[in-house]
Amino acid sequence: MLANEVAYLKQVEAGDVQVYLYGRDRSRTFTGMNIFYAGGVQQVLKYLIIEVSGTVAFVYKDGRFPGEKDTAGGPNLGRISEANDENLAPTSGQQLASFESGMRIDPYLNGAEQTGIGHSWGLANVTSSEVAGARYDKVMSLAGAGMLPDWKPQPTTEYSNLYFYGLLVHGQGVTNPITNKGVLSDGNNPIHRDEFEQHYFRGPDDDKFNGAIKTVEEGNILMNSYNLIASNSEDNQKALDDMLGIVTR
Image (cartoon, rainbow, N blue to C red; front, side, top):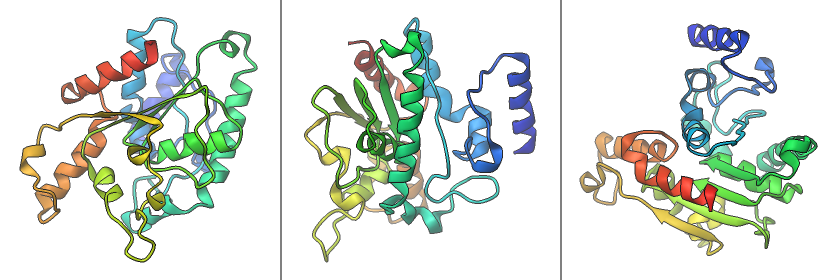
């Protein structure tokens, strides 16, 4: 990971990569860090920047996401239940709302259309920022996790949800037998909300999955489909085309 970090910072030093804020010790650049430095989380926005002239994109991360390790910043599946922690999202949402408010001070960005895009728990971050007062012209969920109970769709915002049948979507179909609500965000997920325009895509290995995770291979299929929607893979081209259409319409 350190080698990737050094290579990334050399690109920053050379001016090939622009960094708005870099605070390593405060996890401001975690996704985990390694995938950030290697460019994994920038794939969709790089595609949109190339296709839509004049686009300015920020790859935003401030603070820890659910399940992050204290070292490399990768996922700790034993702590992934933090994604359901309603105390985590409001704080993160307030930070993002502050960033969005500061960004709008720029005279070149103030009048531009603003689109918030979130993959997985990143969508919880975006919608929590709406609770904190942020406003977007469009919100795009890439297999988004869920929203806070007090989240309300904004009447002037377009909402879209693009997804493959991946691990998170699989979990969003599970019901808590005690509450009769979904186990993830009490079922308050973009896939279940009429405010979100739904864009479903079949994954390359969907035919190998029969509806239940019984083997390691089936688990890997769901994980790959979960990650696919946030990539620039050829298998994701139809989704990328839809993202482009949403951004430009």
